[in-house]
Amino acid sequence: MARIAIFDFDGTIVNTIVDVAISFNKALEEHGFPTHPLEAYDGFVGGNLETVVSRMLPKDAITDENIDKVKTTYRQIYSSSKKENTLPYDGIMELLHDLKAEGWKLAINTNKGQKLVDELVVELFPEGMFDSVVGYLESRPSKPDAFGVKMICQECGGDIADAIYVGDGMSDVNTAINAGIPCIFTEWGQGNLEGEYDKVIAVENVDQLRERLFR
Image 1 (cartoon, rainbow, N blue to C red):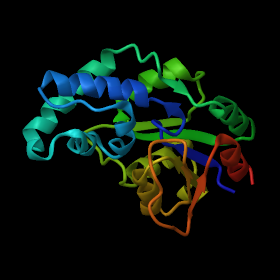
Image 2: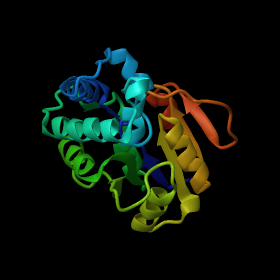
Image 3: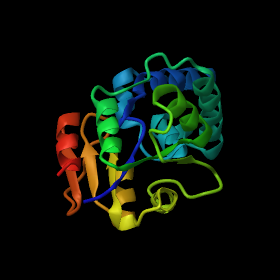
Image 4: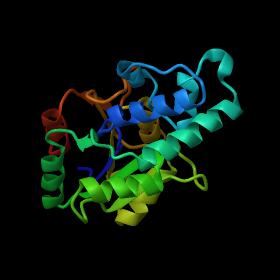
């Protein structure tokens, strides 16, 4: 049985989409680009920030300069926002507590900036809940590279064969594949599972996730 549970952050354990969409729309508007309805953001998010921004820009405006401008402004707006709509999904906190009680090591692997995810973890979760938190830094590879998984396993004092990945996007699936570990795909997030994979199982709710982890 896997004893290191590695979770994606946005759309997997924390519902962030409303505050993310609000901040992106403000950044787009500031640079004169069209904004988008909330429901459109389910199709935008996933992957690194440059990829996300490129999906929401008009096709004729997708340039490195425009992506960088929107990305930089978004980071400023989002980091300073109150994030009043950002909360763990129902049942997640109880699941994490139960996993810890059973001796699991818990970790986060996300393409959200390291400083920002560290701040949100402190704000939303009890101290010591996670044994490793690996976010995005320009100095190291981002998902779907397996770098974060390997770093987490090292910090948790376990072998990569003891890990299982939980996420809501194809970047999470591909991260797990690149690391050679099983993946549980959470259908309540913003992603859609594209195709069938030997070591990937989809779950519809937290109860099903619990059942899979405690098998």
